[in-house]
Length: 400
Image (cartoon, rainbow, N blue to C red; front, side, top):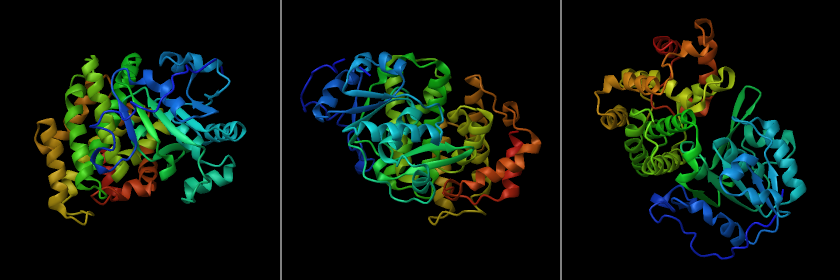
């Protein structure tokens, strides 16, 4: 990569939005938030005194964000060899470059995939077997390569404030979940989302909505995470109800804040079965992640509503689970039984079919689809209602 990175030195002015940095006593990533915040990124990078910076981004993304000069700088080294829903081979290639560059700082700029790759490139070993051990068995990664700064250009994944990242090894999805995956600091500038295609904006908002709902009812939820989830949910129902047709600066800021709140919530709770079932829909059928999650949230909300009295797995009891379901219904302003239909309407209003069968998933595929979803044991077990294979299959057929 290439030219000077803009010699703006200084350590001050990077505390970010006081309402976001270190918010709520959890999700400890410091966030620099606000329109124009990205224009301080050169100075922020300089403040770390880094001699070698490994940048995980696309060239186009760097230019759109105003950092095309990094492409000519001898201090900055670019890794862009990854795809959406990144594969482990992509990550290992980035880790090999990291070992050659030996960076003092890693910067990840882009959507959720770019940020996830940056997290893993910073922390995972470059050896495939050793990396798989960290992913599959939870083995501790080696010491990380310097600090990590994340700059999201979409609003929804929450990767900028979480300590985990997603990667596919073949069709199998892994989550790298370790404190070393958390950013040192994130720069969230809603202006960077202005060039997002409408379908990307909408899918990312759907992802954040599912984060909010799933973290609200997750068995690992806490009072603080539920407060974050409710705040995100309240912020998302309006723009999504309009099919995210209004993309004014105020709405972009609202979506960016909601993504952070929902991300901080899932950083405490992790996700549940809607995400567990979404991975196969994305990996095999190519459905955008947020859309895949919302498709599955339809049947899962109905399932949890119908079964929370008889199949409750949450130690806090069925009344607690019912209270979270009611909170979601209240956020949408509908009766509890009408929530699945409202979720389907959100999909249709954004030109996505609410029927699984319209994405290539056949009736014959459903048993294997159920097995894959239930095979994501951590996510499935975090659901507050026990997932019985035959009952899940019946619920899926209702939205097929």
